[in-house]
Length: 322
Image 1 (cartoon, helix red, strand yellow):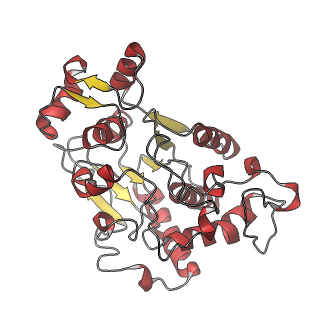
Image 2 (image 1 turned 90 degrees about the vertical axis):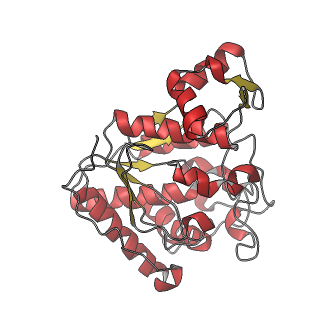
């Protein structure tokens, strides 16, 4: 795919200059999300959903699933970036709900690095010899990142590690599957680097990534909105035994009507106090309370993540990171 297809007709300025305040109620936010998803499913020939198993991408996946069912459209596959450092129960969550929702999951991996790690029995933090990697990976390290050291640590939340384990893996998958639109669950309020995004965001420079668009239906949600959407819409509509008027669990084991965590499309990590699910190596719980009961207004959502990558977010996004 050398040039972006002319058949796509979307407004790349939709959402420009807006903020969450332009969508004052949860219903306003959901209505816009559904509009963006419907346009995305209709305009793109080979869309896919970016799914991490986290709350934002799962909410986005839910909207896509509902719109596809409502309009009789095909449910696109989900792309799950496997960076080899996931929480085990997050992988179990993805398997569980992919099966429940009859969802095709495409696992995007940088297999060259995965094979090197297995062959050398590496643990997170161990050094990877750049000279031993494929020409493709060496090109990214030397020519795109302009990284000059002989090795880099096998860690997700570093400049080189994040780019090779996530962005390169994603771009390889976009190219291999000829994906023209990736539906992503990023939000304006998450990070400064995402604050100016629009609902349809072009990524057309073939020197950086396979040309595609980012379709971003929940930009207008904040963290609290996401949780309200889960407990008052997603969970009651997904789980027959859950109260129709919504029920907000107050601790790890507080689920009504004999339900267990396996019944709920919310990762147990959020019940356990995590607010962000980056990797098991570099992400810690931010409190003992479930994520939705924490002080969302006065604390940082991604504080539990290693900050090296957070500080580099704008540079990483220029290279194709979500």
